[in-house]
Length: 201
Image (cartoon, rainbow, N blue to C red):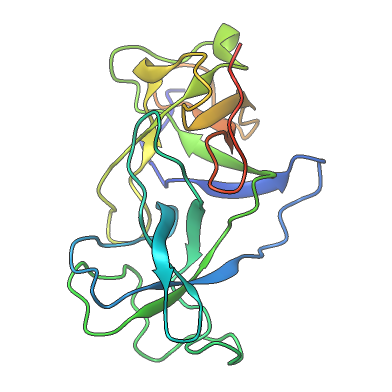
């Protein structure tokens, strides 16, 4: 059976030590001055170099390609509405945070560099193969489908460079996933904001 073409960005699965991902994330702020980017669950983000009035770091959408670090993916569009407030879902929280914003959004980001993510390859140019495991692969941006991210692995970008964005760990063992077009892979963020990258095999 052919793999379905259903990208969902970076989806946390487990920790590098084998433990299942516990659903955790840290609160970051998408400022109301960001009227360029829409955000969906699974979209990779990066620090924007500032913070809100309460000191919560601001983020922006990551840039695909080698040399561009990644903090992690957005895992919930509803974090704390204010620093120190209880987590919850504000009444006006959308499924996808719009490009044009009338307020700041406080979101949860899976920013632990030891989390393993599942992500689909784009299969443009070539498909990733079994002997690509251990190499590094960049991300490629994609539009969300109204619910989740459209970001994928850029299967034609594999290489050994330490600034390439992800490290290919293995094929996702979720039937009927198989090596070939639109395969889903498990990766670590290699060029991570909080940890430097390593060369691929």
